[in-house]
Image (cartoon, rainbow, N blue to C red; front, side):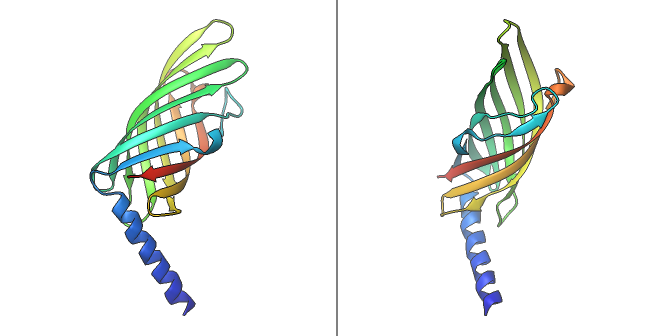
Amino acid sequence: MKKLFIGLCLLISSVAANAQFERGKIVLNTSVTGIDLSYSGSEKGRFGLDAMGGYFVFDNFALTGTLGMDLTDNVDKYYVGVGGRYYLQSNGLFFGGMIKDTSYRYKSDNNENDFSLVGEAGYAFFLSKTVTIEPAVSYNFSFLNSDYSKIGFKLGFSFYF
């Protein structure tokens, strides 16, 4: 009986999840209280804030755009990115990629711009029919300096319309 109940719950959640990844839907994602903790050779740890929006051009595939900032003691970073996110059919597992432009504003009056490639993998846990919590692991490959390349963990909320 317990196995039947668990199977039924998984079936219901997968049907609800699949309905949110249809063509024409919109997804909005923001970090939970600004959490975007990561580690790289240049930062040792990071606390950032970002927002992502996307439009499903095909079932299970959304084109996305991202804006974000990170204000620290020695450098302020602002970034913008464009990319895509693919959801595996009937569950919340997703894979994404983007090209990101980052502007570094150092407190010592030096400025740098960096292009990077970002890849991520995560899972959308549905809290309701339109709200998810999404833990994800990402890798940011910097073209400017290998110390800016980083692996990170991100936790966010998404809203599907």
